[in-house]
Length: 460
Ligand code: ADP
Image 1 (cartoon, rainbow, N blue to C red):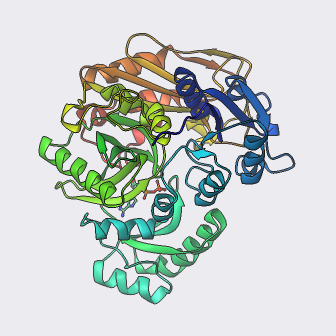
Image 2: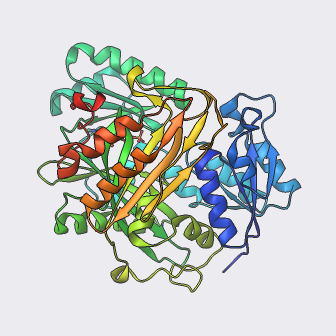
């Protein structure tokens, strides 16, 4: 089975939209951008072959969530494929369904996968069914304070209350003692309702100082499924990733193998198709536990591309057209021949001001000069002189990724690149990132998810 895609609409904005246009153009596919009124001057609009205004009269975020508006643009302009990027509609089952109804290929997994992995409680159950270790937690959603109390009594504090539909580091509450339990439960529910439209929550034991390790997966419609090794995303601030590394510096060969095999078996169990990531937390003693699956391309896919040489976004598009992983078009080797070569690091340069509690800054970029050179990759959204950074969307400005044979070399290349940047007119987190990649803990590879929160010296 193969279905040709000749014109792709990217239902997204910023750097990921541009990333996908590039992949399409290399595949000789025509590209279409959508943009909100607030994004009239946004760079992604000009990087596509065609661009259309979407969501008129809607709020800035809602413009990119306007399913019917996007479908209408697609139908009116001969679009036969839609790539949702990350965030926005990327995990929205209804959107994938609407694409299918209109005969448009949704470049992502099947609706059943969005259904199971869009909901953390269902995802956890899928992992249990596939014999993958999960963190001790409630059996399904918790409906009453009593249930949470019983769980805490049986498992001890701290615990974490999570929104079933949560994502992006939001919708989680750590509870350290009985005193704050009732309030935290109520708050977690009301925050979940406000942010994700559903107040369903569940509880897990909160692990002390884990590493966040995730495995990149690609699967096709013929049942072939491979992993592209792991990324270490433990450098986080408020549960959000800041700097990512591929492969992990600190896993033993044995543990790496076990985690990658575990990810493959979960995704094979659900018959996964397209690109996805299985996320785990790994304890200091080397136990690993499933946390979730992201059924979409991720921000940090770049570093996996650098160490494996496999273009994940092009793979997504070709898989969606029905090509096998091992076809001439994708050219992905069999698992035993997929190599992880050297080390890659990604830093997320944002317009956040570290001196002001990382508040996103807005305004016009008066000067913009970036780094470059051997082993450097830049994925920018509005990274240019004259760009106006608005307060309406996420604060990611440019992703800086470096590759080198050794981890130390990749880190020193990162530092050199960050130092080459000159951005004026808007505050950024570059100085903070420089502190991270030169920190002894970072360089030793001996860091976990508590690194940033427990290292005040990073903030000077
Ligand atoms: P999201 O979907 O919002 O990204 P995740 O479930 O992937 O949420 O968790 C994000 C981060 O939150 C993890 O990388 C980890 O740092 C922290 N976290 C989540 N669950 C736990 C837990 N049970 N114990 C300790 N840390 C956790």
